[in-house]
Image (tube, rainbow, N blue to C red; front, side, top):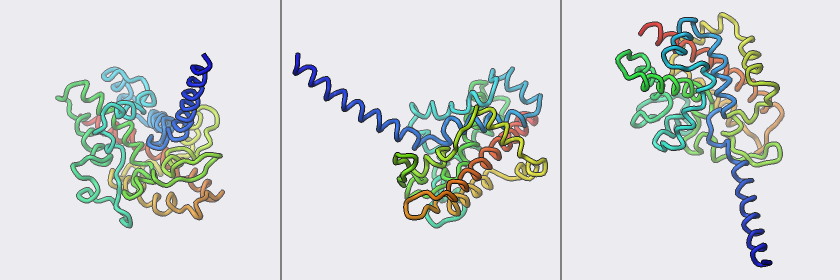
Length: 268
């Protein structure tokens, strides 16, 4: 009996260690985290044209874009080949996205946005394929706006860079996926607050850009801000700047996602 209890104690300790490791690292490979993706969905909803919102509900049975915002991450767990679809790694030292160099086999987030835009806009495609395409777009438009999803290939978009933050070691990628954000109140209130800052002129200007523009914006922010960590520690100024950029990118992603869906679903 004593031996059994000792054996149980050893296994219990190992289980606790594993649990701690999982909790510590769970966010390192999740784009924007589920919270950020839902925020993009909430913001996008408020910019959809009424007829497009009605079509999404009646044709695709999707009541809220926020509700499907993390679907692509969920299916990725069972479809390993889809993992590269969520980012575009760039060679270190390069400042802009180059499809031929950075997206071999079109297996990157920038190419997948175009692919699923075409599928969603194809009225002859099977309904389920178009619905899945819509769900991928909700997620991938968010992904391409995360600066470190256009990070360096060498360090896997900051995934290999470890830093102390709030008493634990996390990756730089995790911080920019939303770890820097101090979520206050509900996600809907946070999204509403961000959306309330958007000026009409900004919306028009943001919507003139292309997917490659979105990628290049993220790349620039990655090199100018995200990677600018000094002495392996996060300064107050770095954290404040990071939060400002993340707020901006979530907002831009929501506005641009709505424009993309409005364009596709009103012209097809």
